[in-house]
Image (cartoon, rainbow over all chains, first blue to last red; front, side, top):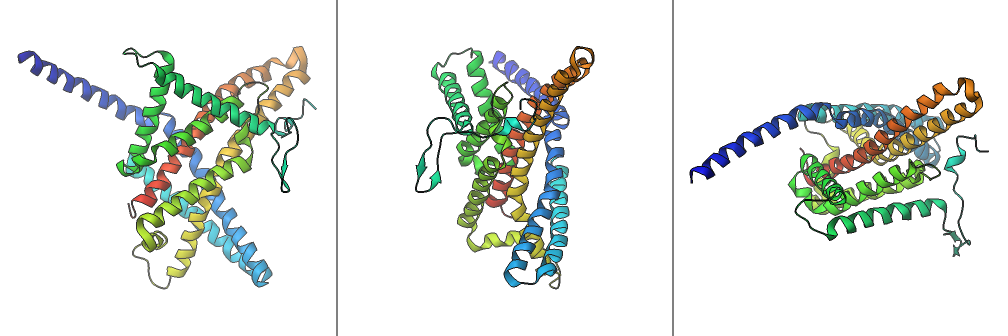
Length: 94
Length: 244
């Protein structure tokens, strides 16, 4: 019985050590580099999608330059929103 | 021809031309390398799980590591409710990873450096996640586009911006993978070309660079597969747990 107790306390200590190492590692591993690469394209993609929607709607309604300008700026806003969202997600995780 | 850095991305057909009702379905080098990646993954999984020894061999270790890596990723980002999507995300991650890694071998072809491949993968993820969201939450899934606490005057504008932001997901997902792979492989080829054209006198510096870049490219190949999988998890999380 005594042995079992000893083992369980030793297990607990070992597990704590592992957890500590894990938490230190999390900040510096490849995941953070992945996050950095992720943000850059998010900004561009929304602008492209916004402009494309504007272009298509322009062709559809025949209002040539008007909607593409509006949707370009909305795309920029959406891109910034994307970046803010993913930055917030990172912040919550830390 | 060999010095052209874009020559490596050329798709050509292997074997006879197959035309089914006007659609060209010929077997190309892209299909060949996709098949190679799939066969490699299947054989890794087959041989890794065949023998269940107490002390795992290297191949078993790789299999178990990849399993626990993806399982942990899903648990951390999408929670336990996404655990039933493990097979899909695992397949996606392994496929992208192996396509990237097979592309790092000399004389091989990088499937993921073509936007159509990455875009189809991203479109499957995007459509799947949208369908899952609607199945799980019904019409309430549209609440995703209506953030809380927005004045009623601004609401139409915000909804349009949110919809654009939602639609930009597959684009950013596919462009990221495609651009990284293509830029990296072009750069490797350009530096390789420098080694040849500068000759024995000046070729050593670009040679060193291309060695360093090869290491970087292997990191990028892994990282892009990781980012692709983790973003799928994040989108799945948005669809499964609304307002989190």
